[in-house]
Image (cartoon, rainbow, N blue to C red):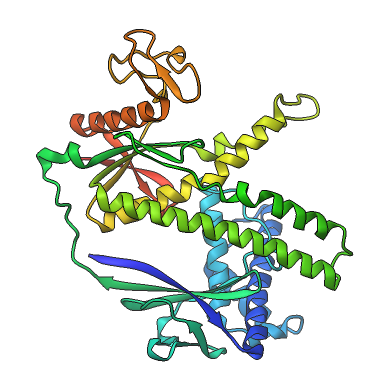
Length: 410
């Protein structure tokens, strides 16, 4: 079994290398934006979409032109990969997996990739890596990168630079220790929520972290200070650095929380069922328009923040590949009425869920926590799909969409 895995480290560049990192990231951003502007102008003129091969010829002209001679100083492969990123963004848009490509701005998502492993040298014993036109750069070697090096992505965030080393290695196919007949004992249904981040069908649950909510007051204070400074002044830059640092702390805390939760679940359960939640639709604004203003806008805005603070999409993505690594399977099931259906008699009614947390069936009198009921129904719905041989939805984050796969039980 071939396993692709990324190992991320913090870089420790010197002054000259930091300047070059900023320059190369800026060059890739310039090429991306210039190609996007060319695509838009080409579309307005009624011409066909410009593919990568044709766009690469434009890149050669830009590097050799008199207007942008500084592009020659940047490594060519990252510039070419910026064009591939744009083409991929357009394909995702045409497939309705993402919004229309937008122009990149300085300081937001600065990154570039070295796709050719032949040009990269990794010296883990001395905590350094060689990158074209950057030379040997030291990095904080927190763990060993396993496997054969495939590519390296350099990214900048909050004044620091990082490398993500993607490797490929052969590993033994993990097989779950659960027997086919005992599948139900190792399967689990998960109901995702806000009051409880994840509630399991066995009655246990994971409390939410709410990293944004914890740091929200601190972040608002720094943002107010930033607005009171003269834009682009030294004091404004210092205030902006504090805002960026707070955002990084929020993201890091959420990522750590999700990694620990998904690792525990994938190691303890062979089959995992989750709801196919459409987070984008659930977190849409209720503001409306000037002609048709929305209602309860403030309450819906707070709910949207709470939903996005949980990181449900990233939770599913991590759970997908971690269950596969451990020989398990992850399936998504339709989420409709999971918390309004009685798991005892099957009666479906909105009156069954009398409050946010309390479930009481109006038909048979069954009572339980509403989130536990939802998790039980998710698990039962998943087992019905498996038992009947129906088409189940399996996560595929490589394509950033759900794929349909036929499940055949041996």
